[in-house]
Structures are given as C-alpha cells and as structure tokens.
Amino acid sequence: MNLTDEQIERYSRHIILKDIGGIGQEKILNAKVLVIGSGGLGAPVLLYLAAAGVGTLGIVDGDVVDVTNLQRQVIHHTPDVGVPKVESAKAKINAINPDVKVIVHYELAMAHNILDLIKDYDFIIDGTDNFPAKFLINDACVMAGKPYSHGGILRFDGQTMTHVPGSACYRCIFKEPPPKNAVPTCSQAGVLGAIAGILGTTQAAEALKYITGAGELLTNQLLVLDALKMRFRNVKVKKNPNCPVCGTNPTITELKDEEQVVCDLK
Image (tube, rainbow, N blue to C red; front, side, top):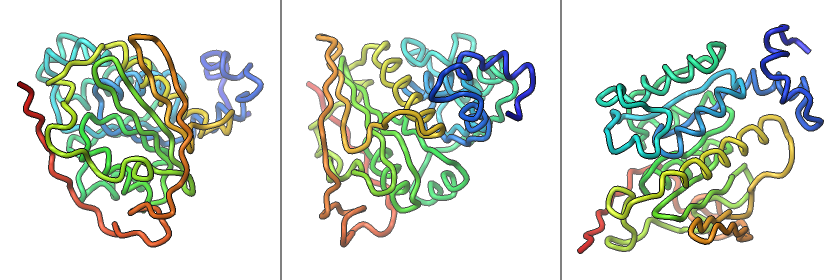
C-alpha cells in the first residue's frame, strides 16, 4: 500500500473490509467523480464521497443556495444562503477531508458543454432535479462511454439505477421526457427531505463499488423506493436493442437540450 500513516488511520474502517482493503482505498484516493447537481441528491453524495477519500470531486451547479433548499440539501447551511452552491459544497468538503481535490464548475450542464465536463472523470453522478438534465446526462454518458448513477426523488418516492457501457441506460426504460402536466417538480409537489439522503447515499455507494470493484452494481435494474410504506423494489430491466441512444441503430447521435416543461398544478 502507498498510504500514509494518517490515511491508514483515517480510512481504517474501509481498509479492514475484505472487499475493499488497502488496494481498494488506494483506488478511491486515485478516483475522479463528477457530481452534477449539489442539491438534495448531490449533497449526501458529496459528503460521503469526500469522507471516503475520493481523490478528485467535481461539482457542476449553476445555482445559489436558497432557504428552501435547507430542508434537504444537507451540505448547505443557513449562512450559505445566497452563496453559489458549488462554493458552499466545496467549503464543507474541505472541512471534512482536506486531501480531496475539489473542482467547481459554476454553470449548468448543457448540450454544448457536458461532454467537456465529463471527459476527465471516472464516474458521473446525476443529482439533478429535472427531466431535460437527466436525459442529457444519460445521452452524454452513453456517447462518451462513461458509467453513471441516475437518481430521482419526488414526494415520498425515489428511484436510482447505474449504467455502465453495455448495460441498460435511462432511455431504455424511459424513451423521452414526460409530456407537459404529467409530472410536477419538487418545488410544486414537495419532497420528504430524508428521501434525498436515502437515495443520495445509495448513489454514493454505487460510485464506491464501481471504483473498487466490490459487490454488484444496480445495472439492468431500477431500485424504487416507496418511503410511506418503507418498501424497496428492484425492477429488472433489459438493454433495449431499439433504444434511441444506445440501441443497435441509434437515432439520437447529437446532444440537445430538451425543453423544461412546467406542470400546471391547480
């Protein structure tokens, strides 16, 4: 192992795990993970990956902290209101683990820049809160051959899946964004704050498993949470040969920004 005495002590609970050990911890320390969105999902993802010692954490977010974020976005605190989320998150990461290199991208992930944003990272995490971003991240990762974790939350429900090259992607399950008035946003319908923690930490675990090779990933399956009944369900899915982005004859060959549809709740 090429770990310092301080690192051996800090990461001792990882090192004694049979499926991780010193070699696995070295992989974590050398890994580069990009988290797109530092809100409800991205907050716990960033906190746990920083604590785990991921060597480089990239954060993409063009928003500032709002007081309504504090109910679930646990990486941001009351004094951070009005501060860019990437800077607020970076400060907390540095406080947890100063050895982690943090690269901030104070911008939105869009069709014109996403391939450049993801190109240097080993694993991508979707922590966004809207369908256009989720489909864009999926399409970009498929085209670039990047593994990534999808996550989504609303009200008392959540879902997550992991895509690696060759496995089912998000569009294999959901071909296109829902039509107008089909699904409200969290700001319209609400979300139980703890749901973000449950799903975000699951995404962080998937990233660490991918980096170290431990266990089985959530590939070709969608993990669905109903928190009102506290039930998890694994829905098996298959790679769709007719998928418009990862299928045999893809029809989506260029990235584009989908329109953000607004649900008119009465």
